[in-house]
Image 1 (cartoon, rainbow, N blue to C red):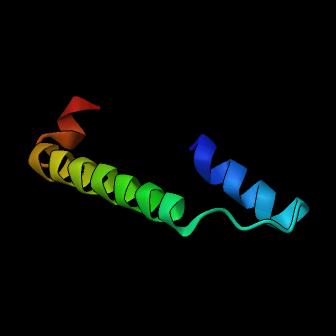
Image 2 (image 1 turned 135 degrees about the vertical axis):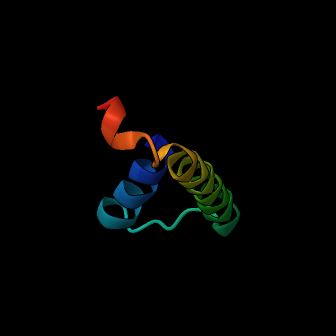
Length: 52
């Protein structure tokens, strides 16, 4: 999260775009976390209402 905020801040305030490699690494990590979270949610969604 900090890397995303820092990259946006650099792009907006400093007119500096970070290395595309760093953006790609961040995107891959975000996508992996999203997929893992989605898989966990799908597995737990049957009992989700009862757990709350």
